[in-house]
Length: 330
Image (cartoon, rainbow, N blue to C red; front, side, top):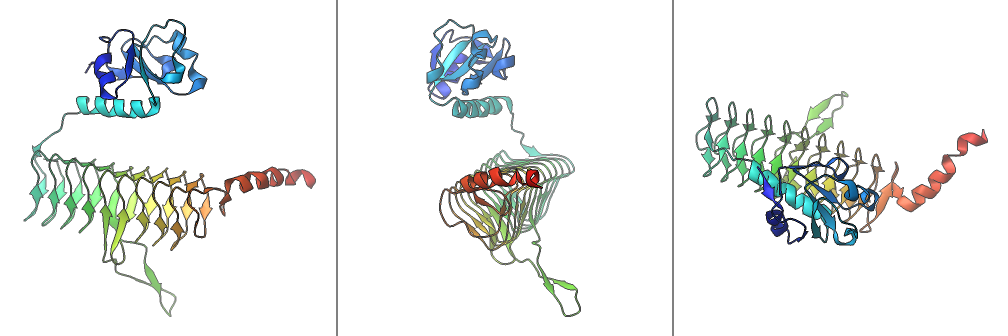
């Protein structure tokens, strides 16, 4: 699929410098771009590559317009990172052809409903009274339990498991082998030293525009709902425990673990392998660096935290300047 510079520029109101009719079919890094590629320049460290790039089109920030003549056609925008995200979405939508219908060896139980233009892949299963919305794509070997509700334009990649009673919004993406609605880790100690399982009677609710990475698990609530608010993006291999609530537009990198009943605010950013203890509250716009451990509430909005136990990032850096030299004093 080839797309012209003119069409790309129209997609995000960019200004063209060069040939508006030049066409591209793939995206590449600016340092390795070739004819037929489109690249982008948003970081000044890569500015020198613009002068030697063989790419057909380069998307650039306004402050990077070169004085010298360059080979690629330029599309000038205010924010190249945002433009590239929009471009990739455009190219993906042009390239991807939605399937529809129901493949052989799939199964729908009594009361299961499929919206117009939806797809059910081979060996996939829809339980009793479950439903999927219009144009939703359910790929091979997906399990959808009883009474599950899934909105429109959602994609479930192969091997996804949605347990009974869960609710998935519209425009969600759930990657391969993710599990939504498995039992929370709830056990009551008994007098003889063993543990008695606590029934997990709640569900999981994913609101609209949520993306769940491969092999990520979101446990059902003991009572009520584990809630992932709209716009949340979870990377691969993340564990969200029972009764957790994650606020709107929060993002988490791989291997984050959040213990039960913790509430994470909106627009937070969690780095890889962050661990958060249970029954805590994390305020909006909190940023937590990789491998940090959160043992108490984060009360102020917009805090930046590092370390385990986590502390204010500036305090951590000052402390690190001291303890990295301690071995020299032996």
